Structure formats: structure tokens, C-alpha cells
Amino acid sequence: MRRRPKTSPAEDIVVIASKLPWWVALGLAVISYLGLHAYVSQSTTIAPALPGQVSSYMMPAILKGLATAGQFILPILFSVAALLSWVQQRKQVASSKSIAPFSTGQHQANASIAPSCPLCASQMVMRGAKRGANTGKSFWGCSQYPRCKGTREAD
Image: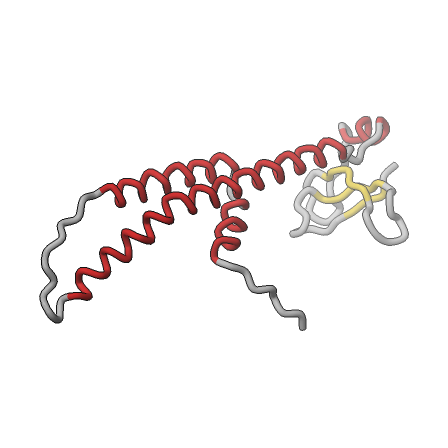
């Protein structure tokens, strides 16, 4: 069994965000910057630390340091994801335009006179066989498929 390659959290963020529409990923970039920048911009009061209370002063300082770096890193990651999403969307649109629908003039003429299904009496639709001995040939299939698997030969 092949092992999944190890990825960093940054790669995971880019992969997940690139599945979103590009404009959502770009919006996340803006929101993450504004939110983290607002947190970093808040002033902190520094009081003398008493023995035993040092950890209560360290945690806000650590979070502020992470937010300072994150206000630049997260928007960059989300922007890269938006770019990837946009490229994927363009490829998908280009490939869908290159695929011609399965129909000919004869099928369109026959489609207006659709027979009823021999099993459930629903209207049938013209389909094209994708596998088997009849690959590429057209046939009538039930419009209620997969509940009904009725078929007829095309004229």
C-alpha cells in the first residue's frame, strides 16, 4: 500500500482553499489579513510579572507574535489558492467546450416522438451506449433510471 506523502499545514490550506471558488479564496485572504491585523494592532498593557504568574503574560505575547506572522502568511496562501482555483476553473470551462454532446440530426428528430417505457410507462429518453458490444449506438432508456432500467432499441 502506497503511503500518503507528508504535507505541511501551509500546503493543506492551499489545497483545501483551492477547492473553493476563486473569489471565496480571495475573500478569505482579505478577511484573514484584516482580522489578524486588527488583533495585532491592539495595544497591550505590560504590568510587572509576579512570581507564578509569568505564564499568564507569556500566552498573549506568543499569540500576538503568531498573529503578526500570520497576517502576512495566510493572505499569501489564500491568494495562491485563489489563483489555483481560477486556473482549474478555466481548464474545466475549456474542456467542457471541447466535448460535443452525443447527438445527431436523426436522434433529435426521434427525440420529439419519445416512446413510453415498457416497464413503468414513463417517457423514455435517447441515450448512447458507452460500453459493451453496442458502444456508440443509440437506444431509448427510461427517464426514471436508475429506479427503472427499461430500454428499447432506437429505430
